[in-house]
Image (spheres, rainbow, N blue to C red):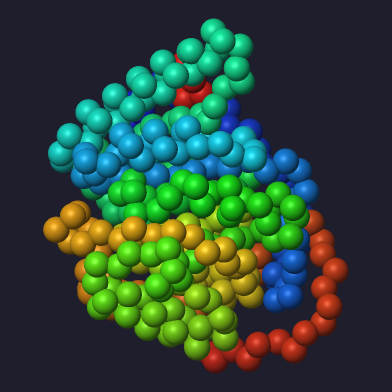
Length: 317
């Protein structure tokens, strides 16, 4: 379990977080050919952007500002979790909170609608990216969750494009796919090749056709994510979530996104050891027993051949 978060700013009590909707008593398997918002229902879309942070003093302020000032087609909140940073990240993050509060006050005086909400939490010690995401997801109020790194490798301009198919009711799970050689910058061929290899392994194990296993931009319904019980606390949670979705027959809708990769000298933290952990996680999840998923609403599905299985701060208020 992640450490108990400490709030940097006054936040609403967690028991005041509104329910995201009741679910049926009887769980059912997720159909392999289902479309539409089967996990989040048909109500208005509200997005919770989850930003885990660890020692990102050079980019955190700009990342927070970019997410909060981006125009969106729906209501948005940003939940930042400082995962025990040891550099100036807490200082830069506190300054970003004050900047956002001042910006919202100007909007209030000018009679403009409020922008995205901001909520900031912190871990007393570093617990890993997976633990930070779990902490953020536990307090999120949106109908959908979207992890977003604080290192500026991804562009906030792509977030509205990820939301579009969900708002249109076409699907519920959307991945932002990095296409090698198109709107991307990789500082290491080995890193790009490793992503391709682990993605290939996931597709073989789960009979899927995913393009980018390790993309950070995974738009997932909150009700679906909260059925996920991760064992991983670090980078492997990223793999575990996708493996869990694929194992339940969920196939993400993929949208091309931009990617500006960093080198290790620029602060990138992932290593070849994380690739090995990814392969282990894929194998473990593939052969593990999985309880059926709970859908938000029943769906009509065209029969298909089953795949064989081998074994708040809102402003200043």
